Image (cartoon, rainbow, N blue to C red):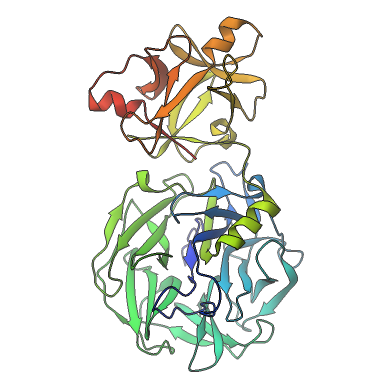
Length: 458
């Protein structure tokens, strides 16, 4: 079995009920409609300095651009088993509350087998209670990447996970309370090795997306019952990047659209890929570019679920939004503004130290109507221009420094929904990148110049 398969975030989701559509795990129609999303994940960085094998949460109003909660620190950590988790999955149960399941595995060593899953209960994800582990089988194999959903015909929940019974397959156990489970059985064993199931229902059709380990592609299969071994493939293989795994199928809170997500295979490569469609039953997916979405910082293999406006507000009130921002390049959307050797530049994410891309966007040092960018990992140092080059320097308290470190935020020159930053004391020049290095320059009408000077604040 490949040993690197669990490296990246699995965004998996059971969205709540939207108008006219029954979704497995959905809340009662009497409950408020979902208007936002919450994302549960664990964290890894290339050199392991930012690894965290615990539950983290982020929120989004559009399901594309995410803000970590609790300053991207854990909201729950396992206290039994390996004392770590991967692949957390959040399910909204039939009563409107939540259950969180996760792989019992800490770190990047995938030779350790484990028969258990971590489990928490939660009313609204502002606290995680009743921590426990549940034993899923007695086999000498792993129990990876759980997904769960309501099966109306059984009046129970199904818990599906990746395991091996001589070949990589999906196993299933059924439960009513996420404390006791039925005997395990094979759920999907197509004759070739598979990994990372995500299962969602649209009306009476169950859709499952998974990775075929033989060719490395993602496939969609469907079933009219959701019962074990009743799925048939209906899509061709999908992949973006050099390698992909951990597919996630999620229905948008509004409209009829769907998104399919996948994670890259290596922790040093691009993190996420995504597609969209208006018809989940058709083999027709449109690639979403990285300009379209911003994952939580260092997030790995997790899950998304729809939440109400009240639940969103409660999560923000309980855990808090980050006191820092990141600046994403418009025309190189895999790159973020960072400092390196006291110079400002844009580099492809992920990188370490990952804190080099975190900025406290404070009131302008020279004019409170403007903004200044203070380094999170070097407090007291700010981005400023010197001979038009952008540097990270210590505030020396002079008027010159304050002016050099102050920018006026305006609508993005290439896209008004993004942002551009005009120099305060050289107001005919804007912050831009050139050869990946930051500087301030006059910006004309050329599309490339305007794109170089446009950033997303996230």
